[in-house]
Length: 373
Image 1: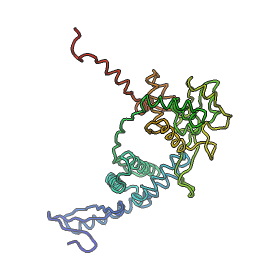
Image 2: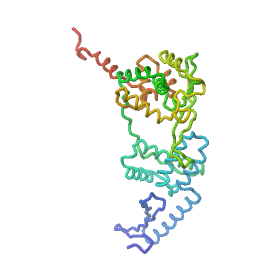
Image 3: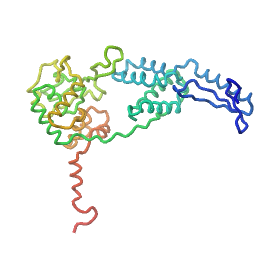
Image 4: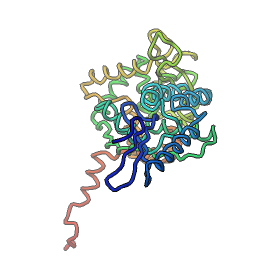
């Protein structure tokens, strides 16, 4: 039996074992450090030394909640509002409640594994593997920041979550795109249809479309300047609304670009052009359209066309795939789409069509290995 309050036991192998409870553990989990010795007194001395070392090593260091708050405050000015809002939400919703009281120098591989396990058990069927990986990656970024800021000699554990491979993205078929194209051209007198048609023929993102003004379109040169992006983000300051719209620079430096206008689109833009200062798609309450409104109206248009619903972003996939089929080189296409790396263009946005695959397979119109007579 252990002596009261000391947690020191004599084992069956004759050794003595002392167990030290660590306070820096996840909620609902207890973690002990075991100390061994030949005698009771030896174990007791080792336990005192270990406790003192633990207190000394943690003295003055912030816990994860404090470190994350310092990280957010320090980095806020260098991040875009969308980035800050995303990180702040993860800190408030996951890192603070689960890891908040643990000292930064006590977050090891086991703590991260327990963190992942708790998220999986409590957020079952809610968080994808990729988002769990993202949450853990943010926690590790906080650790890396704190390590550098405080000059601590500590190792950063690896992410306990392996990202799952994304399933194959299948763009809408040629028939669906043909029906949609015909409808948008016929309805191009309305700014919503005309705007969607711009995305249809250029592959620009929905946020870039919502931010697009008529002065960004040079009809004489036949080019479109992508300079801004509209996004809806979580509020970090206001309490009267959960989200708000922000207008900012595009996603990356490479997203600030010039997109040539294809000849099929040019006369429609000339016909329906409005004065400078106006957005290509106007909102009911604001000069610009909310991306959620465009998504909703796009869904309504697909219903009118009798087409199965697909996300607005699939227009970008379909555009890239069509460009490759038309003979575009990948470098030029990557710059039109605003990518920093052509591998991103190839991996995410270029898909061979069923028709292309059929044409390739039709080359085997005879036996594969039998010689022709």
